[in-house]
Length: 433
Image (cartoon, rainbow, N blue to C red):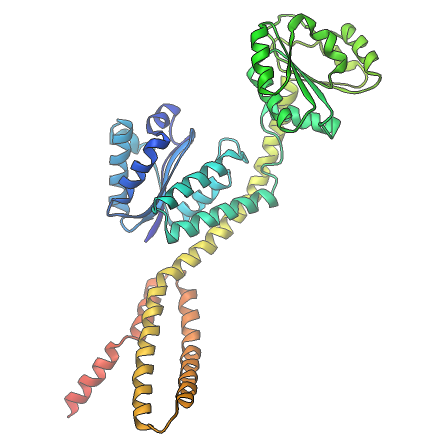
């Protein structure tokens, strides 16, 4: 049996290819059912996000699996198989295990350390479990992948530094103020990044959010989303003295906040600091506003520099995470190898128990005077002897199961305890007689 990971992602295929393969939640069950119905697949799970469509599972036939997956992906996307083959990756065993661990830990994400993939991974896993397409081995694999993901996030810094412009702004605001629960926020304009920054601040529990926009209806709509207050655009200067955080995102061609105008604001604030996040191009806030005491002004380039430094830090942390992936993949492979040798160990135990039962029956027939307690004690002693005799060879074969020559070791182990030796013994006796 082999673990496999097959699919396309942002590294192997363009968005045009990926979107053709993407499917809705309503289609998910049917796709899983069609995959598990294939003779070459024993367990399976599908992960579909905007950046990847990947299939994970257990197979005993690599070539048949590749053929069938290409056929299914072709039907799903209406793309020829020869086109898809150029974009599909095929990973097996150690490479597949590591890939699955890296996906769950967001090391394979476009933005290293992003948290969304963990939820998407869990959701796909739960669906596969509910449909019973993920059973013993995949359940163990995905549980391990999620524990590896948690270990990496807690023991490395891959998710600790902001890597989006909006979140970088919020992180800086937290550094300046510490507690944000008593801070007022003014959103001037309703650009996407400004709105996202406001959402992050709202989630962190800021005191109140005010929204000013040239189109007042848009200000009302956005303020409602954050339980905030809309204000008319021309009135925003009147509110500035009450604001601790200001986010500007308008299409103005000239600065709407200047050093001179902001001097009076700072006088009214009496030394209380202000964080200004200007993400407009052209800039909405004059650069010299930053010269005022207790004013912290950041524009989009300043924040991009923060993001780039943080991304580099995450990449460094990711190299530490790779060591964890390697170690955990080795441990999982060892467990998998021991699972494969378990049926052989069970056969040996069964063989030993048959011999024990035969010999005990023979002994008890010869000693009918033994009472129940005496018979029980004899059986316990024989069981202990069998367990001790089989313990070392069992540990030995489990250890060798993950070695390069595992099949040879297992074959020798199985033959050593095979009942065929009893048959040979009987044949020899017959021949001698």
